[in-house]
Image (cartoon, rainbow, N blue to C red; front, side, top):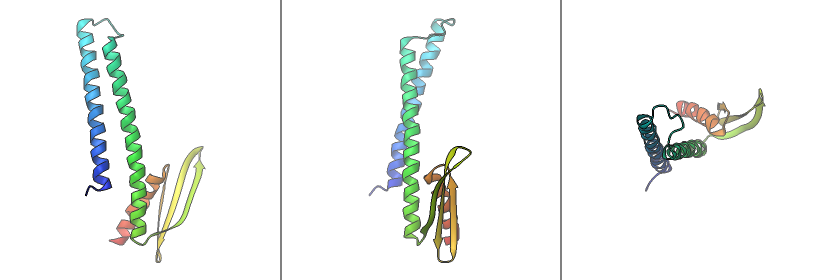
Amino acid sequence: MTTFHEASEALYAEIEKECVDAHAVWARGVREDFERDPDNEDGSRETHAAQGAWELALARQRAAESEILSLRGWQALADMRRNGWSVAVHNDYRLNGEQWTFWLFTKGNQAVKGEGMTDAFAIFNAASEAARLDS
């Protein structure tokens, strides 16, 4: 059975390859345009289309990174709960106009906290500290 981690890594690898391939097509088009006409700064339609495909692949890669990070954060939260950690406090707040989040977990007489601009980042911080205490 494929784990969530393995499936997300496979999906990300596929998207990353798509991004690298799209960039290679665009770069080759730029090089060929320059070789044909060094003074032509606009490039060919094909090169512009390739650049658009590359930018789309980059956007897809960023979205996948964000989604995978979010899902892994929730998986880390589930792992912490399975290991006996409880959420004591979760707070969202603004700091200098930017959204931040704070998570505090307890287990027995121990506590760990995580803080960051996303839940996933804050939970990862807390989970790494919890893993250190659990070992």
